[in-house]
Length: 460
Ligand code: ARG
Figure 1 (cartoon, rainbow, N blue to C red):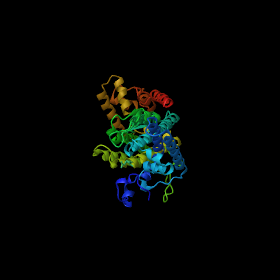
Figure 2: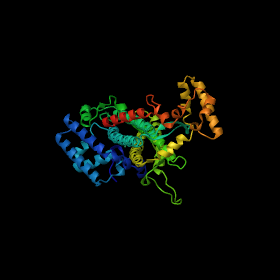
Figure 3: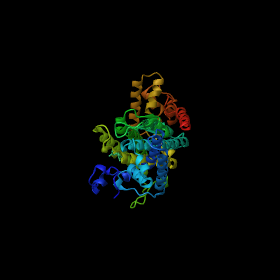
Figure 4: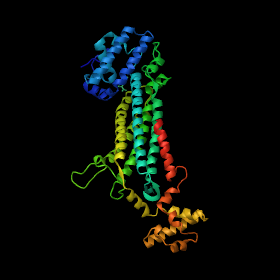
């Protein structure tokens, strides 16, 4: 068993089961690149201010680069006895270069080291997540543009409510993803604070140059309180919150995708390559991806809850409970990246059935508001017009017909204000075209959203 780096005050080596329980190397090895980059910056700073010699610095950097290559090649054996990624690397370095390796940890604790690594890791991942959000936004815009004049029922309470453009519906998700993108900008900012130099909790007696470390690692800010630096997990909670909200959006889209490709709706068809069949029922084509994304949403929300609950009762500063942050972070990153990438693909392969959507609008009463609005424009107060339109719907239900099937006489029986132009006023195209208020579903308003979207995507 490898010797512990902190073994001095102990008269026994760690119980193996206890060590298995407390070690984090199985998962935190994912942060090796950050750990090595952080150590190189730290060693460079130690030499600059004269805490270690330039020769030691050079040996440390060369040794760390060698370890980096070995890990990349898969030639590094991680040892559970060395607990975590920080000590695995430091121990290996010291084995390789001797005393110089033992000087690397001067003026540093694993508490500020792990904080540094995690900040850098999330910061890097946030940029990748943002790229994937952007690509999914592009897929939404492509889909909206491909079916730009398709009309579908818009719903409230899952009851057909008013006709909308399918593209308007797609662009609603674009807007949600835009806010997700912006939330990750905020997460990045809160990750962009450099904790190293806080030591275990109180700072250090050495004349370190934290600004120099921050510059080397491209950090915009530095923690101004050492206790805060080692115990802050806000950026993780924020990351998990932003990820949870993003997943909730994908989950809502999934729910709609699942509904829409059911025989009951039949609005869309997913690509055969994106669905699976049933081992028993030969006719089945299941939207598994959407179901899984909806399912995985619970998992990501769970990671957020776990983190909030973990931090909730912790006294300052570092407590080992905080090690519990990693698996949730890693799993969340993997889940949201995969979900975003897969969803962009689903959208690009999706086919819309315009005639089915059109029929769902025509064979319903989702133009009843337009009928009322028609009367209002002819001078009737809205409340009264609402009642007349309600009566018209009631009449149609009794007569087993739709509003557009009513004769002029039937309309006139309800109000003198009706004229021949009522038929055009309640056609699905007119219903859509006339909702031209800012942000509405009219062709012009949706076109404007699409133009803004192109502007945003070019910028980001
Ligand atoms: N592996 C630990 C973590 O992920 C960092 C080490 C700090 N441990 C300690 N005993 N001070 O949080």
